[in-house]
Image 1 (cartoon, one colour):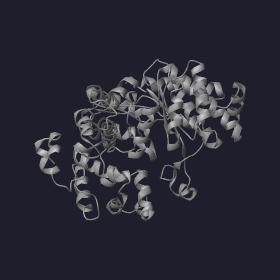
Image 2 (image 1 turned 90 degrees about the horizontal axis):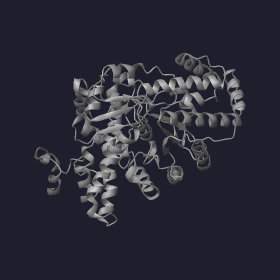
Image 3 (image 1 turned 90 degrees about the vertical axis):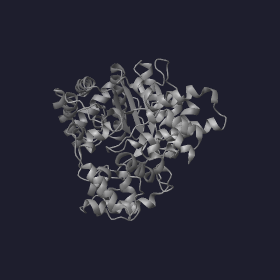
Image 4 (image 1 turned 45 degrees about the horizontal axis):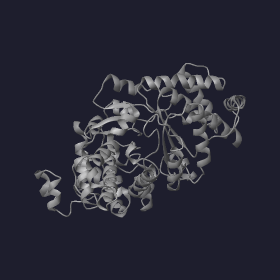
Length: 485
């Protein structure tokens, strides 16, 4: 225990000397070099959370949470899947059981999540957000629930304070082109120390597979842009108007949630015909759907390049697989999984089209299928052109890969096939205001990956000043420069 004293203040020594304290200064740090890198460099850096799903209204209104169940279990699909796997009835997950009854089932489940990242996240969030170092289990459930709920009723635990507590400098939400951004405007008019910026997520604009829903969406987009959308040209006009408005509101990134990339051949006339047919209520053929998505992805890429934004592509999810539960609960309730569609040929073709037109924006590629890490890393590096460091790069571990083995594999792939030192680092991809300790989790793993190489003689000890700078850059500096917030 003497070594830990090098990294913590004397006021914490008594706490960490107990072997029962799971979250201690050495948590997840596998060697001395890792501990040095983390405590001297990574730990001190602020946070840029450039991709998340926080609700802007909750930020603008400085939301006060009712209890620990609401802030911790509400909308958390990771936890819902674990609860179901542990045999917990749905009424205790998304049903009408009381908040404490739901929390009690989570406390019963947590011990069974050992070796699942939820076990680490749970205790890291308890420690960092609420100052609770006890392990969550049935015996501690009542005390932890009461203690944390009481804190949530204070001013220091409202939405905005939960963000400033972790020295968050920038947060990028996920927003549809037709969104009013009214709450972003309110936040801008009433700043609280964190930049809250929109992110352009235009998936619905290319989703012509459900003509009735698409026609309704086009009406909403038309009203937002003040443009009568009757053909493909007017659709692009409306999207450009909204794209410009998002830019005026500080948007610097787009995001696309795709099964795979789309890059079929098409003509402008074909796309106009397909669009007119869709808004007339006709379902497209598989070929028409592919062509329309291909055209839209290219045109979105052009808009981003002209605006100087960064485009993000999340590929490889197959969604809403449980049709019975989709009817009961709707989408985004924990029934999505990893897809296995090919993405190499279509992705390279899409980016080649944009590069050939000199309209290829900065790009981050995320995969949900771990078998695609190397595919996306090599794809990205086909199109780096010297205009920006890390212009095209493999993004952090996403969704099911947002855990130690996934993060390590992503960093190993990026290191071997690219430049880890230019990596823009971690994001939460979360709907929760208490997910910021995931940045700490990532940084501890990053420092362990690099520290292990130092101790194995794979990296020179003489270059520790540069390595410390590299850790600080990946933790914060690279993102700040790359996105130009």
